[in-house]
Image (cartoon, rainbow, N blue to C red; front, top):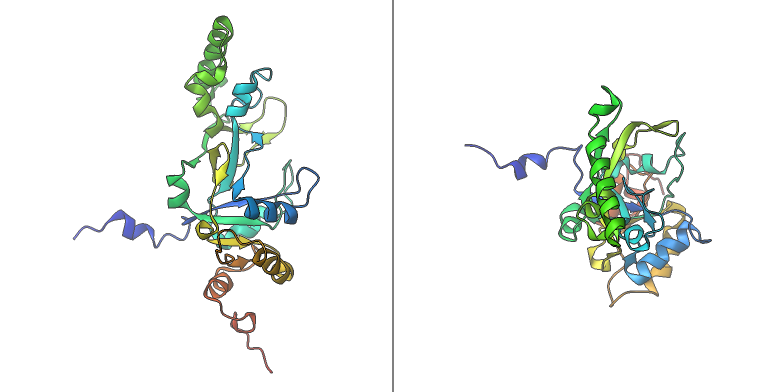
Length: 254
């Protein structure tokens, strides 16, 4: 009997059930402070513009606001450590602080995967980015002719989800497809009950848990706290509440 694709995909370890939002030092505050503020407010603010309209119509405030997104990675939890590494050529690095949500729930809140368009092969005239940019530029010309904002045109909703991969026009390369990024247009709201896990360095778990216990939202319990440097089995142990002394194959003698 034929099997359902839903059942088969559960065995694919390369496909994650979760989306993770990593924080960084921002706005004069540490990543630790930012994760606490996010959890207390229940909102991840869309502070920056990304995508193929990022450098377009900088004088159009409405359009620029429409390009602001919240970013996630679909990287499986056991590989979350890689997102925290200092990587050559990366402009904005991530901290060890993050929030994990189920992909299904994030999709219900209109999160979408980024579309990576290759510009490393064939001639430049054949790149798929060419018609995308043409649609963008034609809409911008019409907007300026009619005194409108580019945000009023359908292409504005697509641009935040389109990124090139390959050589960059101003030097270097842009090869971040492996992050398997997802984005959400505008601020991303959540409750603690929708947080699968919090990521933080293990030596800060107790302090973080105590701090969050005094800031509970609507009486919700503090979500499980993991370290992105842990392997999958230790993460599973922590999610189950197994003491650290028992979370691993090596015995702890008393």
